[in-house]
Length: 234
Image (cartoon, rainbow, N blue to C red):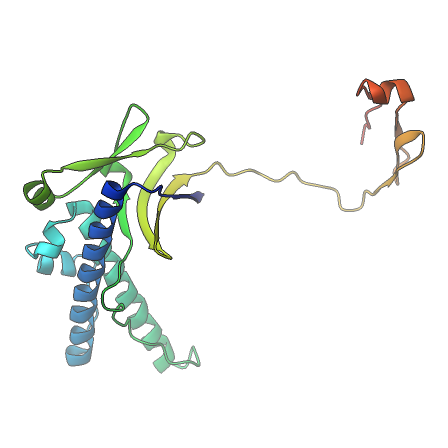
């Protein structure tokens, strides 16, 4: 089971500039992938393979300014959207769905898109996550990485993916992590417990299987925040 924790990025002009640049490049690379996918479908009615866009654009500078695994994830997401569309078109033609699906469309010009890093691209040092940049960024700006704080309530070992999310003129970190599945206890739906809140007795409980219990507070006990409680064997 996976969960996602979102953290708002603080007002750090240098870091914001890096995040803005990366998300802008992700936006442009996404639109390039969408363009190819649309043309391929319109002209040959074929859909994209998982790695087709990576092979096509790996020498493009929008691809090269990003860390390779982040760029690959962007293009694979585009390819997945076209494969889903192609499956829906087949289902529509066979009459399995009533509404005709729409082919993935271009993102709005001048926008930004999410950048995702798999766990294997990240490193933890002094409770800071090292997020790598592409070789082109290092050559252009003299930077090969940037650091973000690791949330205190998460374990780095459980982290699966880090996303840089632009939203509402702000940036967020999204930490996707593996969460332990909690097994719900099996309850007997036929057993019922009645609970009455009294003046001197805090709670009086009676069940439909012949068990009862009470929890009584004396005034002195209330003042001292002490509760004498009888447990229910239910």
